[in-house]
Every structure is written in C-alpha cells, then in structure tokens.
Image (tube, rainbow, N blue to C red; front, side):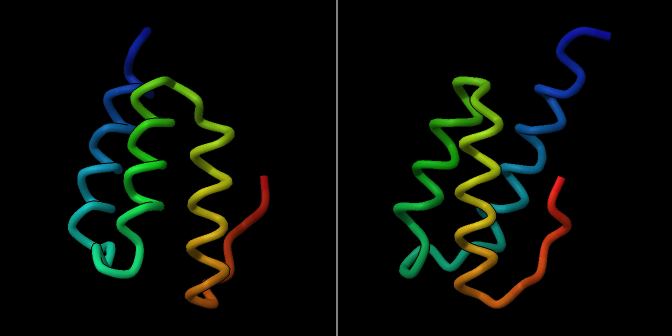
Length: 62
C-alpha cells in the first residue's frame, strides 16, 4: 500500500525524538527530521549511522 513506509518512518522519527539526547544530538535530529520529511531516506540513514557511531552502537549495514 502506498505511503505505508512513509507513515512508519514518521512513527520511528517520533520514537527517536524521545530517545535522543537533544542537548547532544539536536542538530542531527533536526537534520534527520528534514530528510525524512523530504523522503530522503538514504541521507537519513547516514545521519543515524553517524549518531550510532558516536554512541558506539553497531548497526547492520544494508
């Protein structure tokens, strides 16, 4: 169904807003929000990977 992935992305973004340390990652969260709102998921993934790297969280590379 068209748009399902988009709605899911917005839900995930809301969860990330709760989990992010705004003082430390506010700029990255704003950047991530812009990318998701513009359906630019490749650049959004890059932001998530950078934050995960700073937090030493391993991610599966796809």
